[in-house]
Length: 311
Ligand code: CP
Image 1 (cartoon, rainbow, N blue to C red):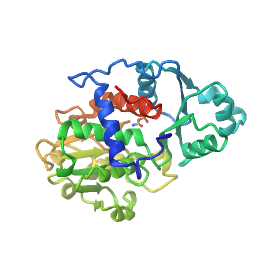
Image 2: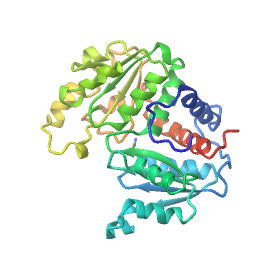
Image 3: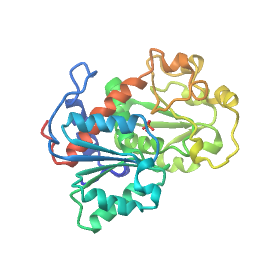
């Protein structure tokens, strides 16, 4: 594996290798992340051309736990603002002896373009990790979601998983669906308004629901998504109150799922829009453990790309 750009087509063997490597970076109680100096002397460049709290920070922590040097490019004060092209920026950062680029971009395909450019210019020793591109893919979020599900539910092959909300604009949903399918989850449900749940998902074996009560019945895992207003370009939407009434996860709606169902959310959450605080902060929520597992999963990806898997 040279780059991690998508989970689509990633073999099950590699997915499991990443999850197992991540597990080795967590302490026995799964609450703390170890220091393992596998990337000493290497440079990780965080290139976030779109906002982020969790992904950018956990990549930084992950790289530091691996003893790498970390550079966070501040895009708003970089020469991108003076018109420098993305690939010129990349060439200059490559000349600073980068080993890994972690790239988030609002344009779907931007990390692919960077990887292609590095390969074409003989710089394929530099790894590219997609940290979320447009509405296309968010592979490390998909991995940490799989880690979380395996941690709490053990066996993927017995699960019903519901993904709820704005699936149309969600790179997280796409990466989750690819990984859940590869890992053998027999039933994936997509729940949301007709305008935000693409019918093409049926070709991936996903069951579509517009009625949240029906979709949540007897599920083991609920993945809530926010409305991605920044990708909607003026689409007609219900008010926050109206949306919450139909698709907000409340304790009453959660009670329709299995009693031991877990509630996940990639963040950022909009409380009172897609999720009630009583659920977000309740006993079935695993939203904060997801963040901790994200550090270990990102460490696993970076160390595997660098060829260090002996943990
Ligand atoms: N889950 C996620 O991508 O969150 P951030 O946008 O804060 O990185």
